[in-house]
Length: 263
Image (tube, rainbow, N blue to C red; front, side):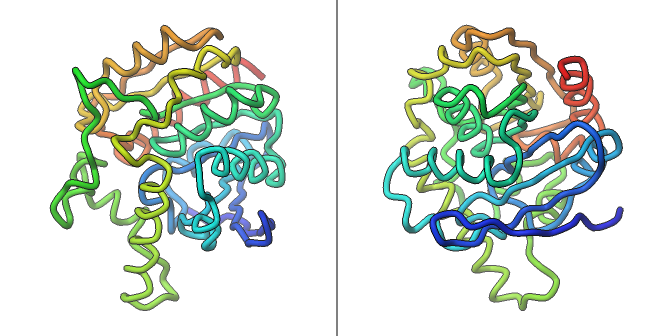
């Protein structure tokens, strides 16, 4: 698995990392809880048939400390809009996982022209008190990895740190990513997204890990009922919340079938 090209863009005076690999139809990816410190097998599978562009969200690995300047949800959405636009992804296919899926859906609800199609992997942003989202910030140390993947080592590999950094700095990188996600999702992962989902007219694919302990599958129904555009669903066996890490080939194949049918 070869490394992607790395470049950077400026968002509000802060530098955000962009990874890029492959050729063909452009497809963007906003990562989930923990962000990414390394290129993953899922992204490599996508890059076999498309040009994959991976912008780092503020506060996530590669995303600088811009998150400390984002005081409310609108600030986050504007930063997401600007990041996607400056990454060259405006009007392209867009994938978002978990917290990245929440921001992708919300940004497209406000600016439909941002995405040709939308693929959401267990997107956060909704809350049902009868079937609450698992509070990932109420977990004992080391437990988040068990919620994210059936194979927690896959989560560790994707998020555990940068080779050239020392152990302490890598711990800071991880904690900063969790802080950034908390700023977006606090409290209870409810961003008010449900009020805006009807604005999404883009064709949408929902992907859920069959064993997701964070976000019950019932939430997929809420997305399906609320999004105006055509919605399809793919449930991935052997996967938890970050299905793209647990089952990279299966999730990549589902996304590629969907996006390449809607070029």
